[in-house]
Length: 153
Image (spheres, rainbow, N blue to C red):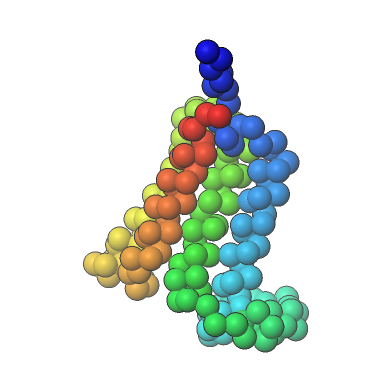
């Protein structure tokens, strides 16, 4: 009986650092396009876009992409999950398989801030409105990254 030998590399370790960074940039951009296309223009970032002279690009996105109806979950929560996953990919690219104290802190910092701030919103200790879907997106990003970073092919 011939058994397939398991590799010692995880799924993410089999992807080159260039491709991991490309995926991180893609997830970051997709989250950004969703955010810019659908969020209210009263947010401070739209003032920054105005100062940077990016109004025409923003208006183009909002009139072309923002014209499509999408679920609120995609509009308000998915970008956060995409950005957190992109962050993990960048940290993975920087540290590879290294698990030093600095690497562990780097992996942990943003998820703890994201989840912590979301939970603290329940108690009005952090400005914002608690959203269970934001929390779900953060947790899903963590679980998917953990799976891809531990499962060996």
